[in-house]
Image 1 (tube, helix red, strand yellow):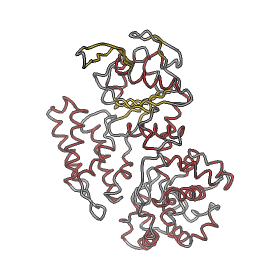
Image 2 (tube, rainbow, N blue to C red; image 1 turned 30 degrees about the vertical axis):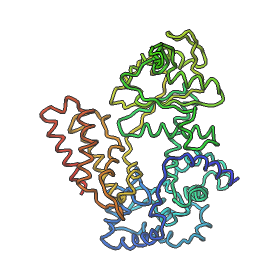
Image 3 (tube, rainbow, N blue to C red; image 1 turned 90 degrees about the vertical axis):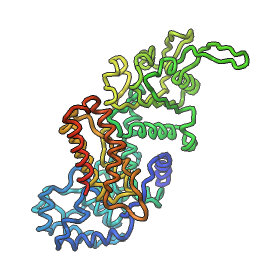
Image 4 (cartoon, rainbow, N blue to C red; image 1 turned 60 degrees about the vertical axis):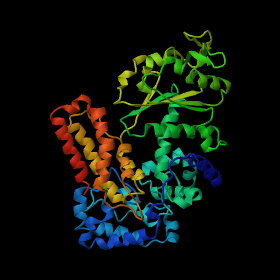
Length: 495
């Protein structure tokens, strides 16, 4: 059974596009760092410890992080934390194996004078740091439980450890399987979870909906990237024999980008001129559009799904481009007559459409009501924490955390200082461009250079704000002044 599980997960990670780098947590130095943490509890250096930041080399913690009061209390009352560390420092890999099924690891770390809450994610991060080859960096119990279900191995786990088993048992069980797959790069369970969760949402649209979904959000949230990887993964599921590099060139996958001049004839089909070079004549014939072509392929192979990615879908005149498809998209497999062809046209039920759009480029209002109800819509929010994944090869985790804070402050300033709607945020991909302006040699950078900050502002952030978000408002008297102030904050506050 274990081998079957490993092969099943391997088929998923083979198509997995993100290849995480080995974390420093996968080194014996982390055990030493825990001991240093314990010693720092008796000195003033504890307030500067890497453990008192939300993200470090071990993992990032969002909600549930220590409050300012708890951090202050920890500097004067360290008993609970010290006892907890003593328990863990007393384990070896061998003795840990006998304790995994118990739920008593955190007994010394209870709600009391120092901590207002139990903070399980923090405790899990410490456990992972001490035993990085035995636990996962998916730190919350809910996320880890969801990951087991996404991998379809929850039932096997429950049979072995019981339904009420702790995070430690789940993490230990999954890490053993992942070790079989990618032992050379360490743990990547969180990235696998994030990827599978997003893919599940899209797959559900193709199972229970009209098989048409729009990913929308502000620029830089990774809409096209997610759509591409999801389609490749779904095709790989149906065609496990197909090589990853061959999927995007297969008949099951097609990509088109809409633009203002994109027409019904481009998408569905129409009369096109054909030049006869020999006779120097021009003739006219009917030519299928990209959607007609994929529909005809799907009719020939009804047992497999065919996928069309429409990038920047809202940049075209959608009602004109889709035409009669308003009916055919909802009533799959029912023939309709096209205005410029005598043949009937069918949208097969095995044709799946993913569109992407920046909702600030043109509002969702651009979709008329008749067209909107043919699609499911999924909003992608700005996720600045993904900078931990985009920038780890260049900056230390502490540096990335400071950068995330500055980026978050800029996004807040767009709504306040520049009086833009709260929806006008800058996506993480724009902030991630800063890596283009850093020169990395032998070690990671502990401080972002002002030059890099100035360049990412000049080439990416300011054009987005002034051209796309502000438009003509950018020439108002107070706007340039406010924008300069925000630029200075963005560049100077990193130090």
